[in-house]
Length: 270
Image (tube, rainbow, N blue to C red; front, side, top):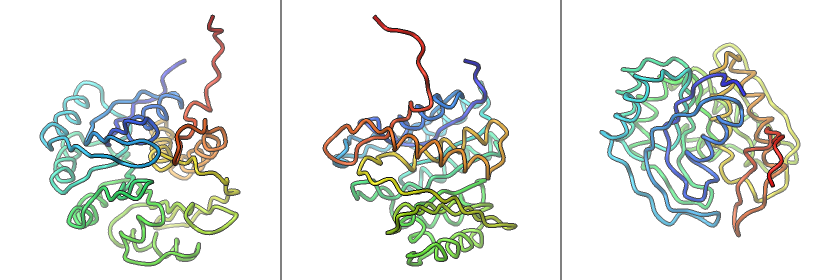
């Protein structure tokens, strides 16, 4: 299979393999691109929750980003879990040095099991310094509520939140509507010129661990290959829905999705 593009992932590791760097690498690879990584934290977790988080030093994170990009220049960057203010500032400095234009930010704030992954000071720095540097931010409803200090209970609220993120400096915002109590899932893409709605039937399942990481990585991959941001979001959402549909149902809690749903293995293993 020919490799289509190169994607640098800046995010935390998930020992259970369903989210974080592991989900990102699987997603980028299964969609035909080459994944590079800068690991920001090592977590001990499984489908029932997070046991511990060990942060990587900002200096080492910057080394990963800059040294990797100096040799293999990424076509796009996906940013996930950052964790603290020093890491965010280090990532911002490194982004200024490597000068990659296509950047997708998944503002990882709370783990699926409810563990808080970022403090209030870090959120403020993210809003003031990082937001304006990215092409797209992809918050779910709880994350969007934190970022814009607004309750979201409807699709109209999602649009308002998206516009508020633009006012904070974002170029585009994809508000993910999976947390709304509805039979239909609405994901709303807002930019300065237009509003797009992606409508899908909600899949009833608890096996959704890593969907946010996966979606942002899928969008980054399509975007890195030259697709428009709108088409990248549309294709990314389809990929995630298929991955949820064919989830392997592992674990006792929120199980992982099937990142390999787009791959057909022709070789017969004996």
